[in-house]
Amino acid sequence: MQSESLYKRLGGYDAIVAVADDFLPRLVADTQLGRFWANRGEDGINREKQLLVDFLCSSAGGPVYYTGRDMTTSHKGMGISESDWQLLVGHLTATLEKFDVPEMEKAEVLSFIESTKADIVEVE
Image (cartoon, rainbow, N blue to C red; front, side):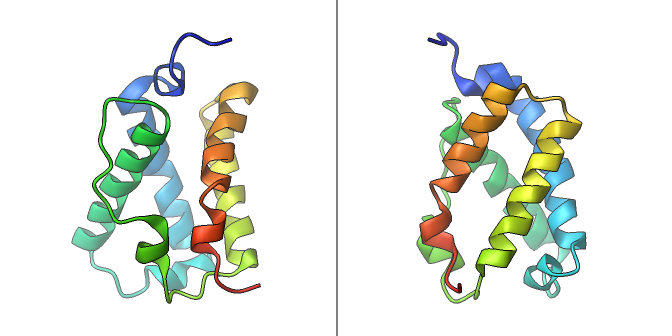
């Protein structure tokens, strides 16, 4: 059993910020997913990145409190599909692999992300 939190095993706050710095631009640049950011300004995207960092840190057991809305409220009406979800997971996996995140930690991150799917995906 691991005694250190996933947050610490991932490298802490700065490492999670680096992941977000790589992951979010992948989503924005994706030809299918980019529609969700098409009309967002730089400030809105920066706010979203900070919420992503806070969510990842908090979910990984770090000392950061996520102050954003719950996943259902923040994604309701966006029409996120199963196909969109699979692309997101693929980009996250690629980002984690880019940073050489060990398999166990990668699986833990993907597991807590997967736990939000029912609250985010609205369309088959």
